[in-house]
Length: 108
Image 1 (cartoon, one colour):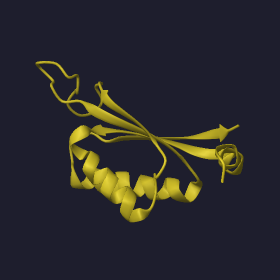
Image 2 (tube, helix red, strand yellow):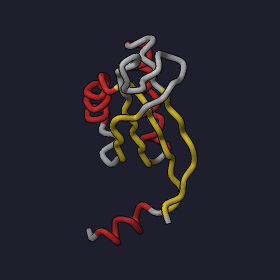
Image 3 (cartoon, one colour):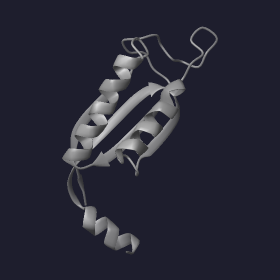
């Protein structure tokens, strides 16, 4: 299938899932994504800084850690699976600060 055919096939309403988490947890996310066969296509941003409900991650001398951010576009079923992965890792790593946001999106 060509690139343009692939875009047309996946055009339309989708879910947008944004996950922000400590870079120390990336291997856990990747492993669970592979096991559950979700998030094969994503956008990944390294060195994400911010302050939420856990310790700040600012990449400086005081708060040296950094976050990762994944943006995933998927259907409703995959979205539910991804959210369950987030919930599982939140329980496993209490206090690490894992943020997850789901919104509607449209591929044109």
